[in-house]
Image (cartoon, rainbow, N blue to C red; front, top):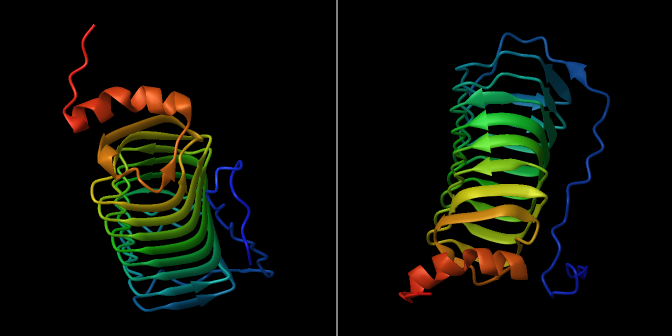
Length: 225
């Protein structure tokens, strides 16, 4: 199906997840299990600190107001699921798959998503510090109304990714590959590294002026007076 362009720029809009969760049962298990299978359940206000759910599958699930400090969810698959108000430091989602997922009002720090695959994901509200997305693949991902502090996109591939009313502070774009990426809604748009990798993205005139000193430095252009 043909996609609409964003603001007439020719940049294709991201497809957002369309979630219709069934009636969920509250999860009453003792905790996460490696390679566990969770279907149609809600984890509400659960303390998952340090628990190991590596390789687990979450289908039609909700994690609401959960604590994820040091939770190990590497290679987990989160499908058609909602994470609302989760918080934690050092959550490990390396190599995970997130498809048709909404992450809302999260307070996270040092989350590991390197090598992960995100498709039709909406990240709305909240604040995420030091998000590691190195070598990840993002397709149809929207960052909306959130604050990202020092996110690391090094070596990642972004396709149809939008930043809407989102703060992007000191982002690392080293080695990133961009296609149909709309950065115009990022305020501020601060790029610590990889400003030379913006091919495939669209920015506003005001953002271009803000980035001019960084671009000049990257190109070895001296600016005086």
